[in-house]
Length: 332
Image 1 (cartoon, one colour):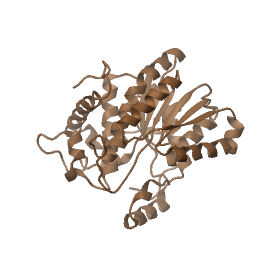
Image 2 (image 1 turned 60 degrees about the vertical axis):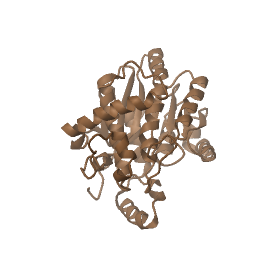
Image 3 (image 1 turned 135 degrees about the horizontal axis):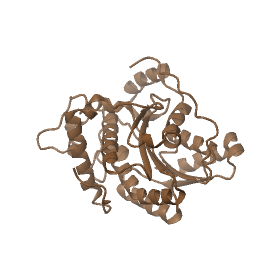
Image 4 (image 1 turned 45 degrees about the vertical axis):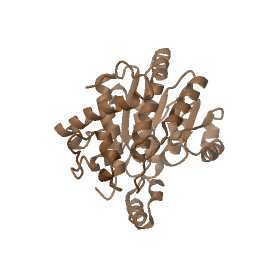
């Protein structure tokens, strides 16, 4: 890992999202808030802050409305806070039901909410918390909203966009490093739910590997003519993601961040490049900064491809508990 990260150019001038509606998960802090800021500065008409903590989301909303750049460029924007507890499937479905009842269009879905916690925790759905929040709940959200996004694309004549906040850390997963491979007969989700697979510093990378596996398999089944889907890594960004770590872990992480982390504005440039600048060629692709890049070698290896297919089939089984699986989403 180099000490200094390369510079990233700002977004081009003249981007206007007037008339569009966006959802940003994890919008009350860090990269999520910055994505919202930059969407609003580019004249988006409606943006939904999908947040776990509604009072915090409302405080974020008030700060956005008071921001000089937003007052100047987008004084009539609709900014709405909606509850989305990503560790709970019921909350995801409540969110989507409410959104669909109140909105007839959705142009941009930013799957950004994510956690990186030092301890293993099993949530109500039976899965390990980081995997649930960063991967499974976002897949359910995507599948629930995809029909509306397809309809929106048909109305407008332009593809809608789904963009995941990813990470180069997918290459540090316990699978990618070979430190904790699946046992014979074990499922991918079962592996990550087990105590034996949990590694504090690698669990975030584990979750981002699953997101990338899903994206790469999805592009084989669903083209991007109606909904373009991609993922980006903004590099190391100065956010509070590591604030939940105990002090003995937080201090070294913060030292590294002080030396090399980018300001959060850069993450917004990278995110919006993937979500509104890059074209159809970005469907099913992974961005490192603002360039399409290859994933970690494990992903395309024979073993990685076997894991990708297993995860796809297991994800279909998991989602079928809550929704009718779309016809294009076939097992492999």
